[in-house]
Length: 244
Image (cartoon, rainbow, N blue to C red):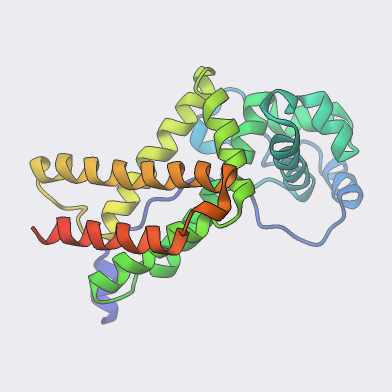
């Protein structure tokens, strides 16, 4: 593929995500944060969801990792400002400064469970040719995202409880739509007609449903699920549908 063709491609959808991890210990990161004052990446309660969790410092990434462990080990109800602060060995005020509320913590955990790995997958396969190879690599990569049964536990906790919270529900709906749009673009179908796009959106919604459904099965009975075979079959079914 030549450089001009590459530059003509529209940018792939981006979901907001946490800052990259780095080697500072939580205590050192906290000292750095205090020296700098209010961190650039702290959550503004009046900001749009797209601005939440963007560019968090190391101490906030540490808190998000602890919140993820709490969610998986103890459940959604245990993800509170006070409990996560205790487990992270930080002051509750530090958690509030970065995440404001339980919803902010849940957003961070959701990004760690699914969104960051999805973005990396999209970047990895976006330029594969031919399109059939790109599609199969993408769907196989989706299967790899749920290889860890604990991911399914976290996804189940966030979805089953988060849908009752309007802020978290909006976050989930927004990320699902961006993931659907990104999947269409990976397939090279982002410029489809309105009628075709509606049909394809339904196909992509089924792909998302398979991912979440298999994640739950992996969490409850991992030995009974042949993940690789399931996603190979899914790729073949999608390819056959697109060929019609």
